[in-house]
Length: 471
Image 1 (spheres, one colour):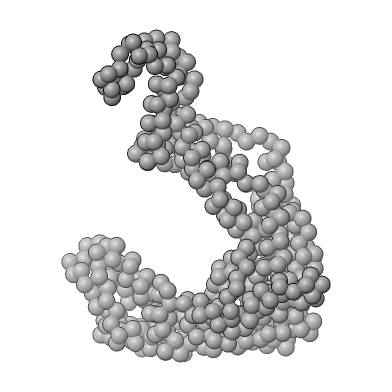
Image 2 (cartoon, helix red, strand yellow; image 1 turned 90 degrees about the vertical axis):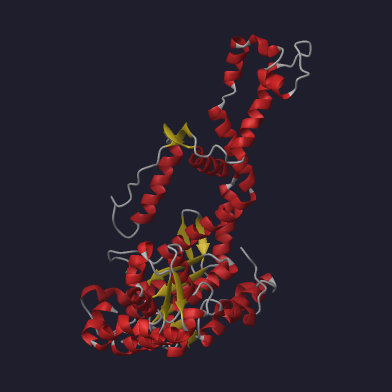
């Protein structure tokens, strides 16, 4: 995993490229990340004593809570998982066990480390894959047959004659050398992708059919996965012949060669260490398990879920199929709107484990305007690029962008506030006809200005009841 040396200001600057506003939240996660870097430079005794300061993000949906956590994890290359607190139940009830959060986090770390390790063997695996394709096209055993079928090849080959007029039977060349040259030429053509569209028949391993879902219950998810892996290691994989293009065969062979190069024991060790030292868990809908005043139905175990989450956040050892994983230094970021409940409704022990609390602000018209244009790969850039593939040039004018931002803000005020996600809904609505007609459009340039936006949205926005359904 990366050991980032970014300062808090640099981290915030990176987050600013993708997330508009919410400076306090960015500042908090930046400090938490920098503290990890600081901790690793202390003595081992001191490192054990310093625990991460978990963060509770409070704010309505669509203001950037999830995106902050996700971008933070990508920034440092840390194992990351996003879960919804409502998917888990107290032990004894039907549903997912909260320890599954850590098991899933480790699984994500394994995939991440595998991808990183694979990059070291990328070229080697590609070379071996091309050699296997050559073996399919021109098996070496055929050379033996050709020795008998074409005995004159012992002295010279037609290819050699064409390439060098000075060759004569008095200058014998071994058939092995002749075939080797021609095989090398074919290998060069394979590597240059000149033969990618050619169809060949290769032996591939049959895809194992999953039996997951046959068993149910809290702990059977892990049990089922382990049982499948155990069977897979005992039973040899079945092979079957299949016709495919050389390009497709190269992908399959490359994956198989990468598997041979990778040492899974080393990968697991690195993944477990990365999980314990750098893992980030984002728990959404945290407010949903804090609601009080209900004592029946699905809400009966909400406090139980809190009590089950508590030891994992405090620091516990979770048994996984890759071995025990300690959660002492995993960073937990919880988030929720807390409209009905409030953070003080959480059990006191859990409140104490989220000492950093940040309230995210609802988005303003100016925020919407910036979200449309400023982030890397902003929404305006995305829609412009999409329609350009059909030859349509979209031009978002300044007053058009202002109008979209104003409509998004207004609809959020009079209906449910879904934050920046409202922009997706509005953009889809105003560009619906353009997207539909784009392949046949006679007009190649379309200006999305104030009048264009008003013409698409005025009727819908003015009818509040209709807005609830359309926007």
